Image (cartoon, rainbow, N blue to C red; front, side, top):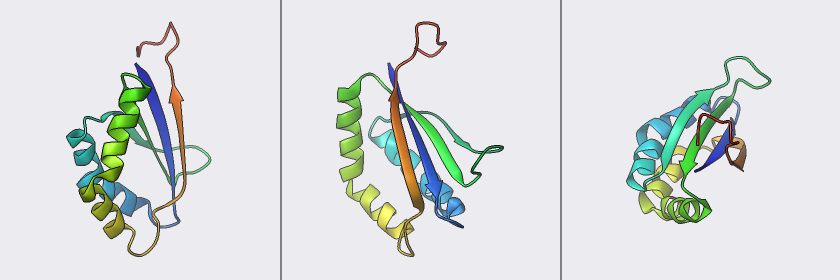
Length: 108
């Protein structure tokens, strides 16, 4: 099992719209495409409280590529993204990293 950490720095004033997009479209489409979220977080205390952070679980990089490509090319996702960004991008910066658990991690 590998994990993907994704950090979205929202554009100023757009964090609520980003949450709405996840609530109304993204999470449902993740489920449709077999994408397994571990959890979603906002920064409570830290350098930037205008962030959405989440972790996805994958069996391997091949699964990640197949499922992410299917999600990204889904016309329903493309329409939801376009609609949510009709007044401009919701994110200023997106970071992601693929992580592998250590031998002593409770998540394997």
